[in-house]
Length: 151
Length: 148
Picture 1 (cartoon, each protein chain N blue to C red):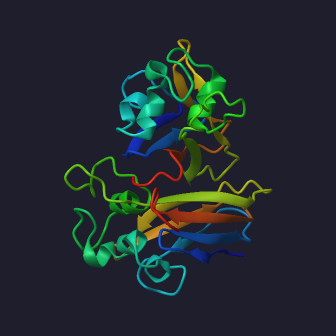
Picture 2: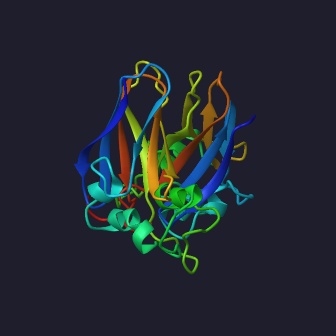
């Protein structure tokens, strides 16, 4: 069974997806496609601004195709190269975290989340799962702006 | 040979439990919400959003009426998992919690997981499952709230 992501909570400062599957990857796009898609799923606010980075730019990033490093800067708050920081400081960026709801109880299950871009330079979030010897599992992916006030 | 949950931090907007499993193989610990001794959500929460969630059985929550809950309603409140809009009021979801696990000693690959459910009387529960001996932290929090 492939890995899938289903939106279960939609707030202005956080999204929560239910991730289900065995092994493989689930990709959350940001092109305005059907959910799961960051542009489609985000409400007005900081997350929506991140999702619009391709269209509007973000921080000192100009509009246009992004790299994986820039996508990680936006969605994982991983901007070691200061690709986003502008003269006003570091704009609010997201972080992603995973928590198992039901893990595979007969063998090791390893899941991870990373940010990347698609072939056109639109940011993506990719949840990947290693081989799962015992069957299906579920987990939650939180995409959130830390320390933001209000849901 | 057991799995336990010990409250190690109680704030108005978050709780932290230390999960300890001495079991080789699958085991679980259940956090109740009946007002029993800790670990219990009614007992352990301080005044604020988490306390209101813990009182859902008595007072209702959002558009939920008071009374016995289902697992789907418990997940809506404690896991922010409400695709059916069971709790949403007028298009707005009242503040709901999330549960997150941080494994402290995962050397035996315990695959610690957390889910919400209800007991036989319809009181919400938080159930942590482990797959091996381990220690881990369970955080129950109201995201994007002000103050601890």
